[in-house]
Image 1 (tube, rainbow, N blue to C red):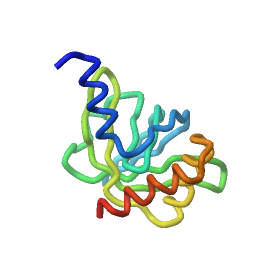
Image 2: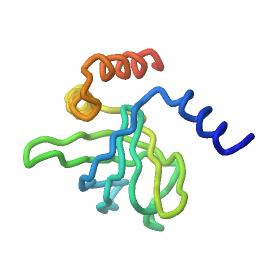
Image 3: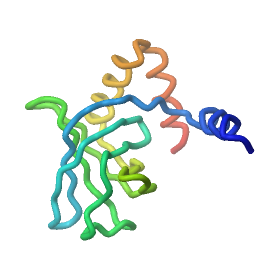
Image 4: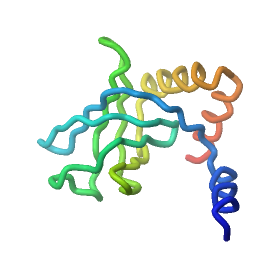
Length: 128
């Protein structure tokens, strides 16, 4: 399969828009805490601009907190999806309703289309 066809197939499978978003992220696994830089986010997960520290256990949940402002954040539980080229992909395994609302609003503002954000949220719900 050519690179162009691979990219097209990947885009067809992608149900969730990736939003480029520069933010600080706090991560925790057990007693271990660290910070990272966010590259992009979707309703299904996020991409960090670094690999995980050696202390992280890849098959255990990681708690993520994305700081949007002083009093607003998105919190979710994630697992490692992949690590390539100094980047780490994390897939969301659970998220609270307030965080979903903040994330939906963030996606809506970045897409510029409330109906597109609503479609993505419906896709997420239908996956469960």
